[in-house]
Image (cartoon, rainbow, N blue to C red; front, side, top):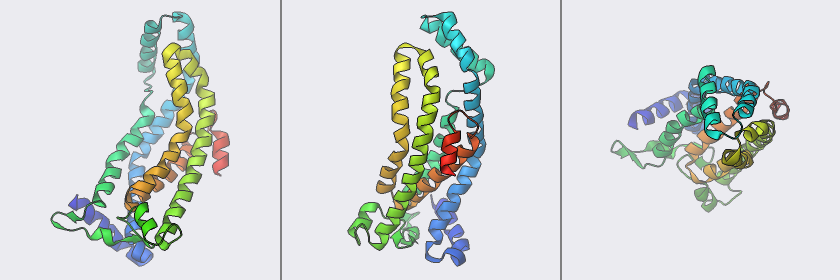
Length: 251
């Protein structure tokens, strides 16, 4: 933890001539960008996996016809098909899972009053008027919704709402295109996939809750990462069915 704290402080010192009092916040944005750059190859691999999965739909439909109502044989044949084509249905989850340690590291760093037995000086840094170690509740208690710190959160909420709206449109269109695949699964699995498809478009709005309850430094990581994801997915999935209208909406 102390090593990471020194790293953030060092980057903030380098950025201080440009960003002044908000240098530590700029360092977190830069750190987030570096994490996303490291994860980008996995995101590209996930996009290739999604395209491969889409290309397999006719063969999956054929397997469904071949095995009829024998769900066990169908699932076995489906797993063999994925293994043969080297397609993992879970590949899209890897980029998000790998980012979790970075988020929790920032969360704990800006939730701790002391690091390595010394006072956590990072808590004194701010994003404009809002301390990086504070939460939205602290901003509301110090000036209210439209106070200096409250306005910082309103801007973050606005950014998250725009990104979530874009993701909502894109996920809804993708879910419509993917609906036939859910139908091919049959039975309880189809019902489960249909339920997930209904919930997924709203998941991006959960980021609003996260920004409101975590320290501002961690919220800044979440907002930056969410914005990066929206742009990245618009580029990587621009030629996927249902993606083009959403990409146009982002532009």
